[in-house]
Image (tube, rainbow, N blue to C red; front, top):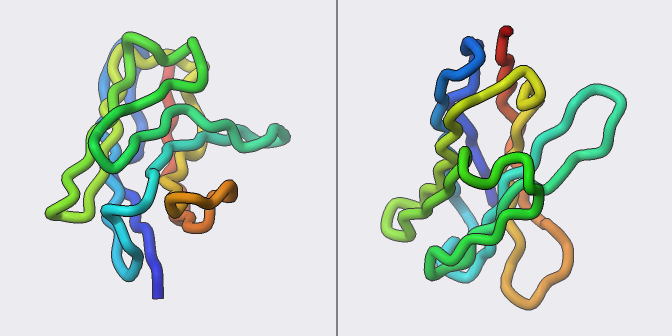
Length: 119
């Protein structure tokens, strides 16, 4: 059974950093595009960044460019999201997701980890 398990969320002051991790199991990780989404109450889940099997990443929202970075370790089935210079606008529940190559839908989802940035 495919599973994505996020960790690393929490409370941080504005200007601080957090590192989220997502450990995958039961899915073809090497052949899966991984992504990070975030969601605030009352709004749709938003794709932040995608990372391909070879580590190439695409940022989907300008607000995180230059502050967030993602990487993956295919040997460990692990993807991380490094978040720097956090501001209260980054407060959300962050989700790890996976999309098998050739698919258009994000098939695999983690349970989400909350991030709260205090001013």
